[in-house]
Each structure stands twice: as structure tokens, then as C-alpha cells.
Image 1: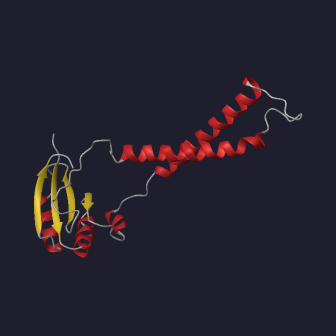
Image 2: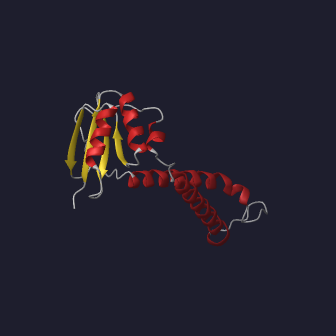
Image 3: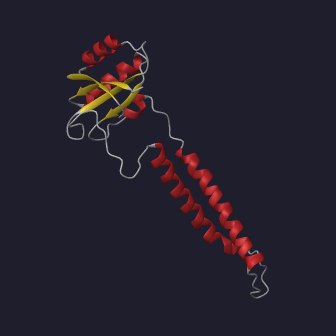
Length: 174
């Protein structure tokens, strides 16, 4: 089943913010908002939750740290033990720089991979914009019709009263 969307087009960010607040006040769920530049407090008005990417970074960094310590311990104690001035084989102070570097590297690369997977940004993926000129001077608010109980006339009235100059229905994937 293909998704159905209602796309409202606005000429300025103030009208868009007013529409976002009106739609959220009526308990409709916003699918996405398109704007040519960042709009202050738009994410808060849309009700977007904080990202969970820091947890991915923490877990991957911790795994990178354990991997670095484990490998260094294995290499210095079991695989290639060297007696350097009578120092112990598992000198953890010497492990710190490489452990830090691998923690940061693994954490950063995992965060990037998680972001690209979550945002569905794959190599060769083409952009799909709901409205032409949305990257130039237009603002768009997109609502998804999830089921038959979606009250389209109420949404149309709400969007027109909020200042939308055009409303159209789309079918497919955005």
C-alpha cells in the first residue's frame, strides 16, 4: 500500500510555524517540514524528541576502548612479550594513547554509520522533494494520511486558516 500525503506550501517561515503549532494543537502528527534554511525552534514546535545517537557513540566508544585494551594486552603479554628495563609486560600507562585514539575513532565512525542508516542516506539515493522551489524560497508542511479516520476537511481548513497558499495531495514515498 502506497502512502498518501497532504502537502501545504507556505511563503514565509512565520506562517509555517503558525501552521505547525495549529496542526500539533489538533493532535495531528507531522510527517516532515521542508525549508530552505534552518528555522529557530521548529524542532521543538514539531515535537521532535532528542536523538539517541549519543547512546550509539557511548556504546561504540566503550567497545572500542575494550577492544584496544584487549588487543594491547594480548600483544604485549602473550604474543610478543618484551623485557624492556625490567618493566611489567602489561604496563597500562603505555596503553592510554592508543586506547584513547581507538575509542574516539570507533565512536565517531559508528555515530556516522548510525546517522546515515537512520536517515536512510545511502550512496546513490536521489532526493525526493514534495514541492519544487522548496530549497529556494518555499516552505512545506507534510502530513501523512495513515488510515481512513484521518479528517482531511479539518486539516485543509486548518492549513488554509494558518496561511497556506497551496495544498496538494501526493501518493508514494518521500
